[in-house]
Picture (cartoon, rainbow, N blue to C red):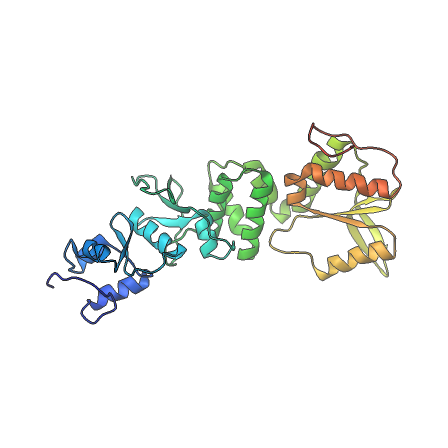
Length: 324
């Protein structure tokens, strides 16, 4: 094949395999790919100078002069980082529609033996010894679970970690992959939070949340503790509530599910407890127990006082709102 210039990648003069490659890569191509197709070395640079193409990264081009989209950046990032690179973190979560807003950074992961440095501030390249799986998606991405754990590494709080795990589990429809991935990581910044939230059902998932609720929300703030796992009668059937404080007429439900929301049965049970039994239900999830501990304690205190409790909770620190 003779060397040639490529002004319009879709034109009939462009090799068919190159046109197919460019379409598959969302209009992004590398200098090496052009050279492999027979394009002369300075062809891409001339197109950039003429305003027909855009240079995204060194040796990586957008074959039109239009708006540079987030997907263009992701394609450019993995092409620049090498054949074993994959989009991960928040960028991968956005491509998978786990999150709604495109992040400012594109995270790319490469094997530990790859030596690639980012030339721009919007691209972050990280190495890993972990054998990450790259499904046949374009551009290449890590699994949802891998991307979620990458996101937790940059989290500033337990609340943020729980939000990442929750939205990922909901998008995937299960937390099994997250649990398996977390187990495989040797280092995990928020391991205690991740392990607690992802505890398997057979290991007492709900009871672990109840344990944290008692020891992080109630006891440090000197609040009355309900009777745990109390069976109560509802109509013709008996149900088990996670916590019942009979003196002050409050019910507590600790919902540790990640990929499911409240069911219609949960809502009906809460309404029935309030209307028929005069026992309002306070329902807490992982984000409330581990991420918003003091705020949750203040809510419990307020509920007790509204039900007639004359005591006062104890603040656990200078900024704690309990007892004030």
